[in-house]
Length: 275
Image (tube, rainbow, N blue to C red; front, side, top):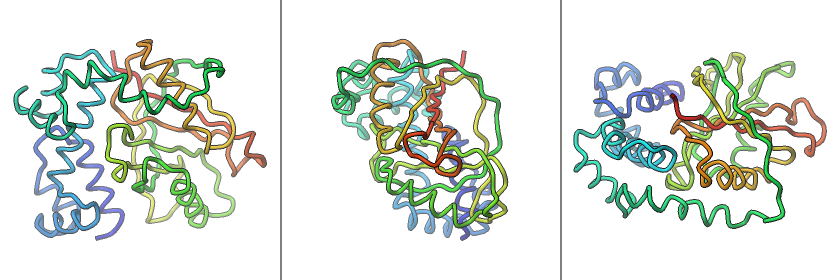
């Protein structure tokens, strides 16, 4: 099965994770029988299609619990469970605590992560921007909690796939919340906004809407400290209601257009809850 077909299957499940998946559609996307599609999928991702879909349901529910003030019952139905009881049972099995405990103790989820933040750091400037839906072309990888060496290697590989005069805006999609998702299942997508004419890239859309924008300056290896400050200031202090859609990184100034690492500029774009 080609990489493009695998990406199509992933995208289809992501877009319909809270619905009954169409076996016919999966077969169309894979060009294999459902049984063979299931076998190949499990061989690549070490989980079945059903397990992947259920994990997406529960992880999106977790993000809604800690990012929003939606009721637990509304969240359960929104992510595709047919009863609050079945949702609560599955959630507790996956995360070892109840949905209500997850919401009540959300600060503890981030506490260890933000503990390394230096107290003398000043608050980050931020603003709210509106992004239009935009088509991009992406390559995705699994990454161990978004470690930079894996992401750096992906972008290095991309440099070998595009023409020397290729000029585009570069984006990263932080598909999962690494404080919730199993570290080895975290996914990252490297995106360009122009067609690189390579079969390894898959077209997709960056969703439009309101985003909270922060600016990270300098080396990508220090970007986690910026995220610590974002979570401390904007999430734990309750200033904004985040959405459960992926966080975007827009690499405004990077190694393709700037000579010095200290001059890199990255926009961190966090989707806000839709009104």
